[in-house]
Image (cartoon, rainbow, N blue to C red; front, side, top):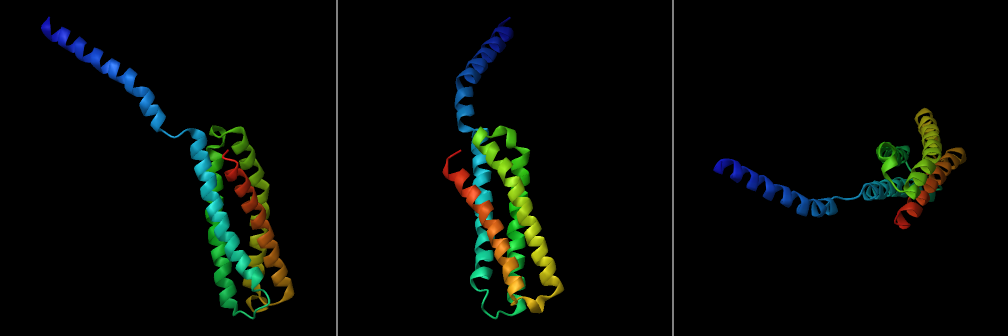
Length: 165
């Protein structure tokens, strides 16, 4: 019977260790809302990158840039927007794990991102069809609308990440 007592003793020690260590292990893992907050922060970073590139195009709209320069900055905006959409899809997947404020912010992002996507797609189609017209007032207005749509997304992300939600 000695092996059985030894096994019971080992299992008892293991059970006590699990009971004592479980709260510590759980405390080390980030909460679900912390994961959502980090992803919102990452989305904010990507929105800021898109914002900066769009702002560059707007602020230099009167310059006679070569169309290749416009193309590069438009590609940059598109890449940052694509990354931002990827962040949004991840946020959607874990939406229910967030706080009520985080869930509301994710819900408010949807129409803003749709507007941004539509605006960017129109600008890219216009540019691809007529790259030589990138210095025309109509193109500058398109780029300004893109910047405004990105600005709305960025401001929402700033608001929800500064609230520590």
